[in-house]
Length: 104
Image (cartoon, rainbow, N blue to C red; front, side, top):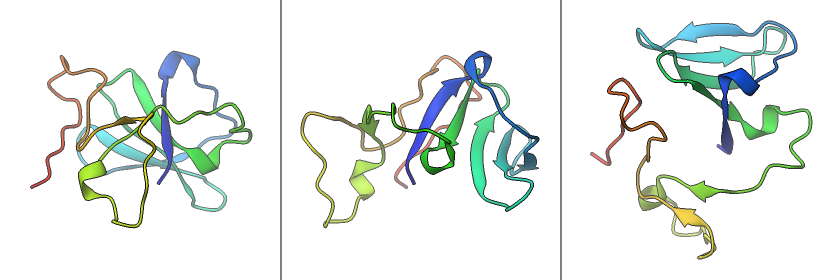
């Protein structure tokens, strides 16, 4: 799934999404009308992840990098000029509650 991250203080949401907690601090946001997944976030972080296809105008989005490349299908080609990470690289590594992931 293509996604992007945005600082919460720069985010404008039209309408009121429905939130579903998947843990004490992690939640997913859904469109209240159609049920499409729009966001996910850890409440202890200052950013929110947004699904790229949910934006009204994504024309100014650019690929900054790829995560979980160790798990990509053999049929995918990732250009060498784009940042690649085999796992999740937390933009806020000093926050002990930030989402971490491993390949195990």
